[in-house]
Length: 335
Image (tube, rainbow, N blue to C red; front, side):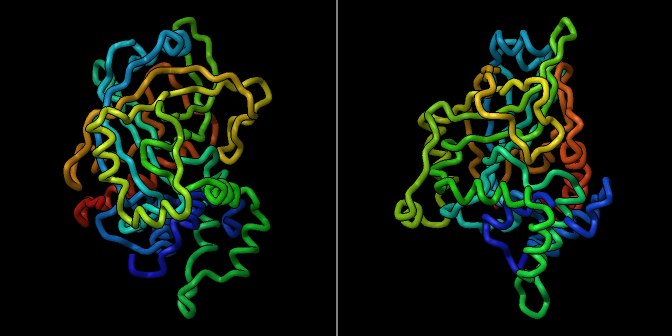
């Protein structure tokens, strides 16, 4: 992607938005991926979002509380293998690690009987857009002008003024310190899901993966001293020391809570239930690994977990598939 490359913060906020398409509910996934490439640049072989990443493996053990909420097999109480991918937000595979912006935790739970559960979690409680049309609009508003090789400020402002929610994610990242590690930041699912138990009772909620060791950020001076490429080595050392684990927690929704908009978090103070613990046990030694060509489609769900009517949730699968097809043809990479 040698065209104009947005900052990590801007690229993260880009993951959602538009004006010209605001009246359309559906967006052609090829057009969406084309727009990402035109705005962020095209790095052949890499994911069009979260390009700089690393594979890991882990195991998840569910809790009795989780089993009371859902029949999903991963909550059995036995250890379930998990394919893990950590990444830095944006399309640039050389994005610096020591700047503010999005970090990602993508997971595939490999449950009993071949049942899988995929998810893509981000280090923000809100997504960058509320609908596919809005996401496309935001991306297009940030497309560099060929003459200046920079986005048109007037166009960016006009779209943001008409769609103020697209600024929420970027503001959140700006308010947070640079993460000290992939292992020391919260990761949200941002979408609502329904958890269905053996009695057929359904509880809606939004989940968050919270580091067992706590959240840790860097001061500006510490981040500068770390340099632009420290996250992978840091992760390997922490996993070697057995210090990478996350609590998988579910925030329980109440009647009246907004469940169809990923730019709207649940109200503060909602009761939280621990569904289990994810422990990362190994990290790939190179740029390969089991995660390389998994799309981490959040609509791949186990029995006992159902999607909400959030339009961004349903819309993520198709662009991921288009991106994977391109990457396979180019030769998949992630570092």
